Length: 417
Image 1 (cartoon, one colour):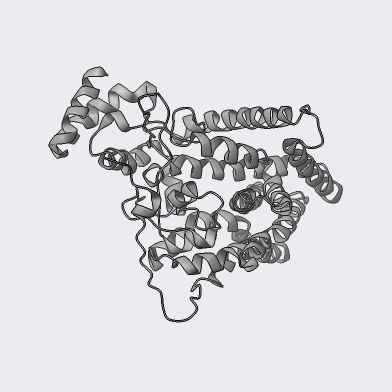
Image 2: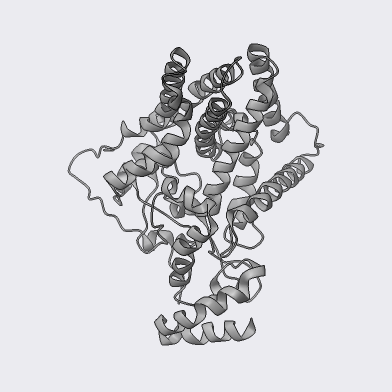
């Protein structure tokens, strides 16, 4: 049976109307660049009355782990898609690119303002921690801005991506994600694709170290093809690191040397938010190899998706991840829902806390992976150290619930293990 293409699986849930189609979310997309502005307002109120409004020091986690998941549940999902002519119009509309870049100036104001507040004398330690995590949370969301701009080919968009990524010291993501992750996604070779049975805490060092090494490798080879060395001015890694160093220098000049540990800590937390989303996006999913040992093309079934409205507005529809991998250059406003793709039990924002707690995560997701593959254990990307344990746990249940044509594969895989 021939594999279905993304367009074969697409369910066009929005109908064409007579006349020109209009994006019903056109101004709702402003929610994402509004977030750092909300953060600045909250920190400004904290600065005025730090004793009475201490809770505002924690505005970042309150938004990421509280307000957004709650609003997702309240408002629900939207699986509608733009019509084909609407996609063409939106792709050519510069408005969407401008609102993506609008995040960046207020992001830098927030970062420096947060550093100034956190490095003042007599600030309680819990407030310092709250300010650090709040700035880190919003800079973590900015990584999605960098992701969106980084998939564009124009130089100004690539620079915008570096600027958005610099506060988390993760500018190498713009290189590795495009030319490493998209090539190896949903394979054991990809450091950014998590395996069934692998906890986030085991995944984290693997993806951080593996992603950095991959970025250096990719950029070194790219420069070699142009006859240039690693220390060339054309090296995008060096360019990104220079922007991060410039931010540290400016912030230290304004706030003093105590700004350095603040910037490092908030950057680490922000980068960890990216990696926990990476952990969620492809958990346990695996591209199969053909008779020549070559991986099949990435298909919609190789990403976890969600249609919860608020997280999609905040994260530029990153949750429509299958379409993103099918068409990486497609802009966020044009991404589509595919019928029959793997669906998460909640939005990305509501899945963050479960991902931090392995037992909670496994309870939510392991059976969903098995069900997605109809009990065929040979098609799952397992943590090698837990493969036999997990097959023994899920194979008997899967055989009972699996159609006859899939049972043989399940039994053979169990025997092989």
